[in-house]
Every structure is written in structure tokens, then in C-alpha cells.
Image 1 (tube, helix red, strand yellow):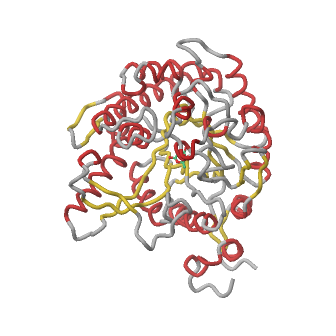
Image 2 (tube, helix red, strand yellow):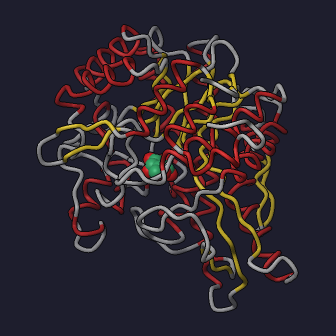
Image 3 (cartoon, helix red, strand yellow):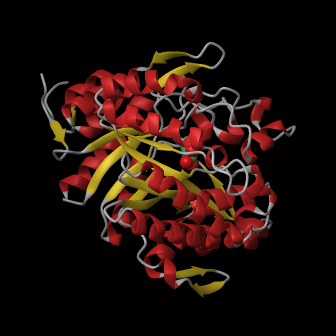
Length: 446
Ligand code: FCB
């Protein structure tokens, strides 16, 4: 019997999120494919290969799974290197394939949200300097001006660029993403060009499709000082948060790019979001480390008692999502949680991660904050960038060799939530009993 219920507003958007390179397979013409061929770049030498074979048609069965389990939306990305394999050469067959996928999503009752740039660049863009090069802004705009007219009858929700902060940090500070640079100033230049790319795309989309809703998917990462009484630790937390969290959203709101290196005016970027796209995974502790000038004098780690994912990538910190939402709603825009999830092959942690994070989303809607939807990362296990297949984020497990899918219990929990448009104490008692008491204090029995 249901004893307590956290209801969501009517019409709440429930979906999962994917990205082209991670699910399609055979994306041989982009910088990630090239990166995968280099020794030592991907854990255990893994390759994206056929990925989830969406390009071979398996999107159909996966979107069936999404729709049958109560979801009403899906976030996916289109692959620039397929649509524009060489400069200004357009592959109409690739655009048609995306039209089929988007039509297929809609036929299944899944509202599509389409990301135009999710980490990958065509090889020819990468070879001419990628996002470090200011010319890429215009190249991206040209791509957007081709894609949007071709897909606009099927798509109203656009995400221009996924996580400029993570892209610029991992490609240009830590060097785990291509092109593997370690130079904070270059990463700032990349972030600047991505802000300009976003702004150009925003204006282009609205010129073509005035009623479109256009945003950017921003990853908020929590930074807490390792020792809150240590001013240097506090300084690191503040500096990191400014760099990672504040820089890009502030720039596309105010038209100013402000960092420790100074301030630049980018007036064309001001007020270029119709909604706030929020990706949230975790919170880390940070400590001052004088030996790490290249990483803004900081060292990040998870505390010993953290509720960690199997490969130690994510700590279960649901309050961090609350912090993220508190900050995001200060922009006064509708909010979509465009990604949230955890890698957990054994599905031990994911049910409680999901339940406790959805509880934070419910807190926000309960305050009438304009949270419109939630996209779980991800529908099915997919290729996790430099971590290859070692991390499993899917509600469905994937056997990469056979392409077989297996439903995890978390998918059952998410299905129950989507179908009820609510998180109930009964669901939590069934799927994540260990957090039942924390979520429903004082409720009688489970
Ligand atoms: C995000 C990426 C997404 C996926 C998740 C786990 O940073 O946007 O593609 O890799 O992390």
C-alpha cells in the first residue's frame, strides 16, 4: 500500500539521454575515433566499435524500451562528422537517417531533445585546430544552419553544446579528451569559442525556427573545501566553482566571460538561453596543493566514507543536486535536468542514487521552481569516452559482443516513477529499502 507519495506536475518530462558517438557505432570520421586508435588513450584499449549499434538500426528496439517503460521524451545528439563529412559537403542520407530516428521517437510518444554538439568534432574540424581556433564558431554555425531546417518539423527542443566546461577542462587541462592538451589558458580560449558557438547557434536557430526552445547542457559539479576552516581550501573550492560552474552560464546570461585571467565582453552571447539544461553527477572535496599550478592549485578527491560508484568515479551526493538546482533557478529560466546518473554495472548503488536524486527534484518542484523534466543518463550502457566500456551507466545492461540488452532493476524503478509521475514510499521500499527511512522519516511501515 502506498503510504507517502512525491507527485510531479502534470506533463512532467521523463526521459533518458544518449549521445551519438556513445551509441551509434562506426563513427569513423571524428576526433574521438582517431583518439581511440592511439595507444594508451582509452582504458584497457577499448574502442567504440559498433557501440550500441544505433546506426545499424537498434535505436528502434531501445526507443521501444524507453516508450514501453513509461518515458515520454528522449535526448540524443546528431553527429557533425556524419552530416558534414568534409567542409561544406553534406550527407543527405545521414540527415535522412536522423529524420527516421526522430520520427521514430515521436511515433513512440517520445518528445525529442536534440544536442548539436556532444564532445565529437569531424576530423577536418579537429585538424584545423578545433575549438581552440576562432573559425570553428562560424563552421559550427554553418552546420547548425544546415541541420535545423532539415529537422525542425520534428524537433522543438535544442541543446546547442553539451558541457563546454567539461569539454574544455578534459581536452585542455587534464588531457583525457582529445586533443590531450594541458594548458589552462587554452581551455579558457576553448570555453570562449564555445560560448560564441553557442550564441551563434542560438541566434541561427531562432531565425530559422522562432518557436524553438534553445539551451545548453551545463554540468554542475559540487566543490567542497576539504577543510572548511582552511582559507586556502576554501579558495580552491571557490576558484574551481567559478571556473567550472559559473563561467559559461554567466557568459551566456550577461555577455561577459569572467575568470581569474580577466574579463571579456561577448555581447552577442547575452541572454542566449530559453531554458537551463543541467547535468549533475557528484560533489568532490578539494584541497590546496601548491604543486599543482596547472590545475589552479587544487587537488580533488572523495572522502573515505563516500557512497562511491564501483570504479570510484561518482560519489552519491544527492544534496549536490539540490545545490545545483538552487543555483540554476537563480537564472529565472525553465530547467531541464539534461543528465543525471551513475556507473554501476551490478546495479547495487543506482536504485538509491536514482531515488535520492529524484527526491531532490521533487523538493524543487514542490517549491514551484520551474523544473520541467529529467533525463537519466543513460538508457543503455554505452561507450564512456576515455573510460571505454569499463563504466556502465545504462538502465539496461549491454553485452557489447552480442548486443544483447538486459533490464536492470533500476529500470523497473524508473518505469514505476515515470508511469505514476511520482516517487512513492512503496517504490523506495521495493527498490532502495536502505534509504527508505531517510526519505520518508516518520512514515509508518514500508
Ligand atoms: C557526461 C557526458 C556524457 C556521459 C556522462 C557520464 O559528462 O555528457 O556523455 O559521458 O558524463
